[in-house]
Length: 177
Length: 177
DNA sequence: CAATTCACTTGATATAGGATAAGAAAGATA
DNA sequence: TATCTTTCTTATCCTATATCAAGTGAATTG
Image (cartoon, rainbow over all chains, first blue to last red; front, side):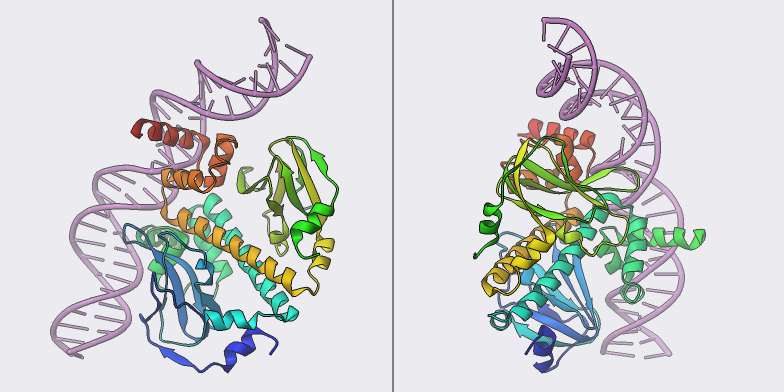
């Protein structure tokens, strides 16, 4: 065993249909999911009942609420399927057992975390400095295979704008080009 | 040697004065800094010449541009001192050599990354869903020892608002309480 | 395939926060 | 202590984006 991917591949495939919820807010039997086919998303629901998408996970991505380990307070992550999907899942405790002592696996995980941090950092900096239009363009460039596949309103939720605004942004872009 | 902290502690202390720049945009001899005394910050300067603070590092924090390893595009990280400070520094290659093969150090680093991701995630979710006022309150709660020590305009830059707006927010808060 | 729900667009109006400008306060320097 | 510089505040005006409200089209489902 020398990688997560291999570990995931050993797991049986689980079919999930569009709309199916895999992780619920507050639930603490959390898992990681490797997406074989389809697309998942993770998101929080704020106090006003509005969703904010934290991450999309199309084919070959791993998604989890691992990052919420330390979470004491309100923020509650959910994961659901936005397309009919096939996933392989690993419960958290099993996940940790993989990590035990093999330096090469640990190194690989560090690499993954570094990528994660890099991505998040870019998102923070874009949220701090970009307009809605700039963020949308950046999203299309960064995820060229995703933006036409995910409903506009979810892209809006990921970018931190309303669907109405994003619709207008898109209209403007079509005009200009 | 079983922790970063120990490794840092072995290094000699370097004095830096307020305003001194430790890492310049584009420079690739990057280092990590452990802050013994004072406070550093990392930030990018966007195309319009505006600073956006990515992180503060008061006593006992480690700050680096490690996270910018993969950065190809325009964004350029800088690190400077916002108070007269004392730091211990480790160049990147030395940093990597520490990580070589000791699982316990690797585990510790993974833990650090997990915390980092958790923090960044919270920041993303707050930027997506909070008003300027809510972000300011959250900042004060999260960093109670920092907000009164860092100039308001830097807090504003960290939160993604103008100093003028933050000043107004603060005024409102004083009224309401 | 009719019905119902969901996704997207468009328009009118409202608002949080930005930009600009100027002054007050507080620190730094000489 | 006086001068210079930086930080913070306050006021006015302005813009990007939100909100509210319909309407249209597309997709799912009975």
